[in-house]
Image: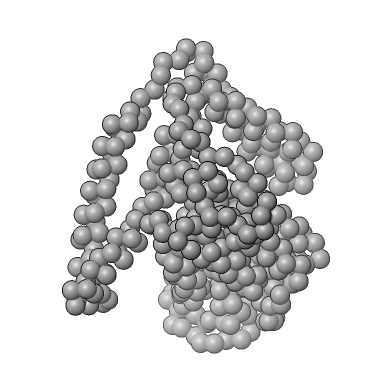
Length: 364
């Protein structure tokens, strides 16, 4: 393998599933900490990889929208904490809002009242965790091609995958439409910001979304979407039993892993459930016979991309259960400045690996 990443082309492009595994690994790591420094480092790692490896495709421009969405989540979390109060005790009172009296049956709910620095800091930490997870999902949206991801799904999940892909591509296409219309207004010398501009852009955006939906429906009908092959009744019943039984086994096994008392049966039940569910999906794929034109391959660089995300998730999860647990979840009572734990921070930097091993998009 050469030290310098090659230029991306059809045969060596990173599999879309690998980008999602990498992003979900970062999101899993973000779910294990409320340290704002670590969360900021995770967002920075995701942003650097997106900047280094995104293409000029429409969905690649959605990352900025997810950043704004993350900031909105933090603001909303703080506003709710101020308006509805928080169970976090605090002694640093910043202001006292007029408190709305509520009936007896609404005991435990508070509207207004005092606002402390501790509850605001807790709200910012909590909102930052959710915002970081959203940004990681946005990174996968910006890097993975939805069409190639759909092509790699098993036949039994094809119809559900189409719905998911259409839903995932809605936000990127909406962002692309808004950017195109704002550029057109600027070229015509008209303002691209403000309430009047938003109202003027909204109608063409909705019209474009409707036309695209009609085009997608016509394309799906022309390609035989929804048509299934005839299979024996015994196969259908076996598929149902295996799929439902496997999913129940996966749920029970996951519960066993999370509960200390059930750790002994969790792993075998999870493995048996996963095997049954996979067998059900394989049998269910017989109802949708289709071929794949030039299927995507999992090469060395693709495996490295997926492994880097998994490594970040595992290393941060281990740190959250070890001596660095307090550093990953800094307290707010009393208020202390969060520190940057060394080993978890170095673990997060493993997520930068795709920026160096993934093939470079063209025109870079």
